[in-house]
Length: 292
Image (cartoon, rainbow, N blue to C red):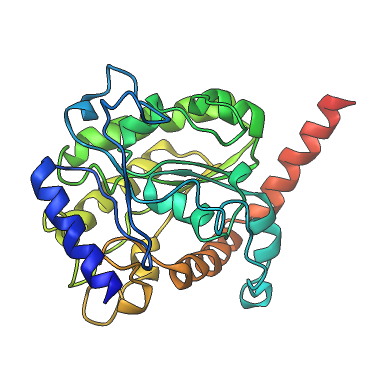
């Protein structure tokens, strides 16, 4: 009942604020709303961000110590070859679905560069507290220095920008990231599906599939060995063509702990197809040589 009530309350908030980003009440936790123009919010986007005209909702209470800094120790590394290897190196960047890795305790704060409500462009102008300081994504990447970066963006773009525009922004973002950490394997996660019970009626699976097809084409056209497309859409899809309800985070769009563990397993198998461990080992060896 808590999930249903929270979802209804959130949908009313969305309608009243003409909201185009995505937020939710996760497994009974009330959302913490942050207006892009609210000077009292901890993080604010650059004034050039076109998302500023909309209300950005942070679906997570960042002060909730029940989740912050608490890492799940129940992940079954035996479900996929090399899962532990990838998991120990993975840094996640993106929107509220990316932030869920931290919120549910699947990754520590120091390995999550994410914030609820961000579009692809918004990610480039926001500040993150991953390192204990408020820094843009470039400065954060320089400090974190990942060899495996997992990007999850696009859900907040589906209803406000064309697929071609988003792909162009994503292309520029990938080039920018590799200019900072060229010795890094970057995974681009597809946008995940929504459930039949999705409260965000402006987002539907037909649109999501269109955007994902464009993302896949873009990555193939770049032809870079260290950029991999991961089809998370199919990983969470049910037999009825919608997200499987067992992965629903409470509003039909965001996902729960079981979904993140499923993604980790399928991601590991996908990376093994790309011989990713061998590439990452080369990156790490080259870094060691430079430090000597």
